[in-house]
Amino acid sequence: MAKREVDIVVLSDIHLGTYGCHAKELLQYLKSIKPKAVVLNGDIIDIWQFSKRYWPTTHMMVVKHLVGLIAKDIPVYYIPGNHDEMLRRFKDFQLGSLKITNKLSLKIDGSNVWIFHGDVFDVVMQHSKWLAKLGAIGYDMLILINRFVNFISAKLGSGKVSLSKKIKNGVKGAVKFINKFESTVCEIAAENKYKYVICGHIHQPEIRTVVTENGAVIYMNSGDWIENLTSLEYNDGKWSIYKYTEDAVAQVIDINKKKQAKETPKQLMATLMQELNMKTNLPGDMNNNIEAA
Image (tube, rainbow, N blue to C red; front, side):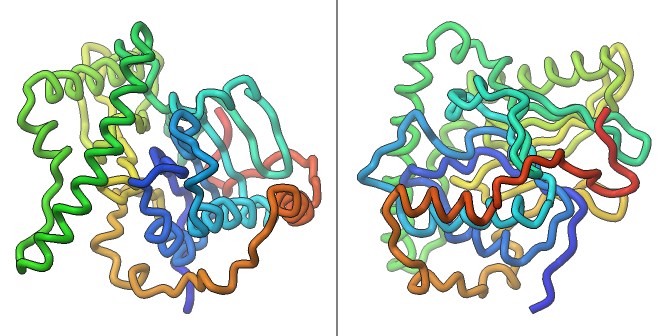
């Protein structure tokens, strides 16, 4: 199968290591595309809820696939979020074509693009981290309940429902927070002369123009791989929201779970290092139209 070529892919809020993560679907998507650059915009591995007792084969297959891209010298930028904030201490670390950074500023086809996770604008995160962590556990439980509800719903011949979306849309405070988050991000982006600003964090995929006192900014959010199963793609000079549920090609890809050899943590690390070949070269240009700002 010929893979679909994409200039840039932005992924966020995958939450590997949690029950809600759709790792299989993400892997099918990744196997269906040939990206020139990948931006991992936070909450890729959920360190907050990480447990040795739950790390399915498909979750490791996603990690291996991303490592495989790095081994092929495809630029991969990892921007830690709040759930994987531990990696922020490795800011500016580089290994092969992988670079860890807290924010990313790019110039794409002459336009300035600002990419960061977005938790810095979350008041709960900044002042009540314990409450945010408690909320994350509750959210994961809600996703599990939602899957059970959808299983029963399917048996009864009804459609799927998203409990968390209904709660978000039904609670005025949640809607107000999302709107405030987006407007604040865009105001700061406009002040700093960015035409585009890309975030994750709020699990709300979107592309829209926001008019501020300092001009218009195109706000984008890559969504998540818990509920929405979305990413942002840049190709042929345009940004778009990718939706797995609308991708019939990706949905039929066989990920060959049975072919995955079981490895100890030490063997796995050795395999990953061998695949990376411990390259120390800097990430190359994504393409002729994209450059670090």
